[in-house]
Image 1 (tube, rainbow, N blue to C red):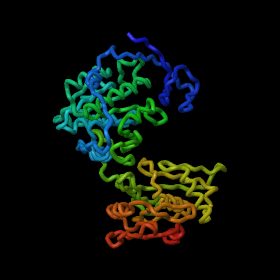
Image 2: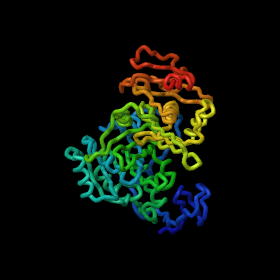
Image 3: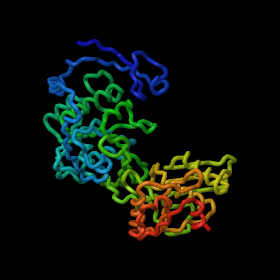
Length: 459
């Protein structure tokens, strides 16, 4: 039997050290090293994958001699998941899904397993019993035709034995922090166990061509628990976001080797599971009965390839504590401060002595610079107490000199605003070149400077 040795791992980034260190040299965090016992032995537990792959040798091949054959993706009934994955599930891919406790990760994966009756799926749970999963499946009410197999197991060697017997076409692991491999003598959820179990699942996925979904816990900072190398090993990283006190959930692609990493899908949490939201613009716009509300503007944004209309809310009030407060929810606070400086320097609005609060309705986090124009108009509308006319949409980036800069894919933004019944959209003059305005029913107003917009809306 091989000699056991102990190694120290940083619980934050996974850095390995032969001795204990107070400060991690990789991530600069203090008191994060934990001792873990590692036993380097290959004969302790037989591994069918190593036996199969030991006789195979790899040879270098010229790139022009490699024959590329595009494999068909597995289409799921969930159109939102297909969009986030880049068009469907890629055979042999390893996908990691992270999210806060209770956000709906297990419900999303079980719902996926129950809505694909033509596919044999193995759902491995290390957190719930078979009765609990059956109870959840009855609540979803889609388990009658599903060929889904449930396995409550945490040892990877037993999981792979069941995989040999069942021969599934899709494997779901819930969760990676509960698995443990007999090759490592540390507790489940430790850095070495998470890394080893993920490596075993990765080898299985690549050698067998079976797609694998693994659910991962997140830390209190919001990042996926375990070493950062975990996110480098997998092919796709999905983040399931949202407020547990609200019904809407957002599935965001953080990393995707087979598609865009800026896509998102929106779901509504109901008693019978998660429902896809095919038109997110309708839920992101509040249904206002009165048009006299100030500080509200509508922006046309893009998230990946999907155009959406969102509601930007601003509140400007007199500072009561001496130092003005600046708060932004769903928007970069530094960019908001830059836009406030532009309004004060270029247009003379005295915002330095006032509190400014900004909110993106619906719980979205927006990084598209095309909503700058809507942010500015919402702030000025609140400060001047003048409402913005209903049926108006803004799409433009604001520069430091007060100019309205061009944005990408303006035709998709215009089409989305027209589809939802808006009457007028303000865009940059530099976007109007090559744009066929006659084919749109919505009125398109191209502008070059922000003061032109102020004159048209506020006089």
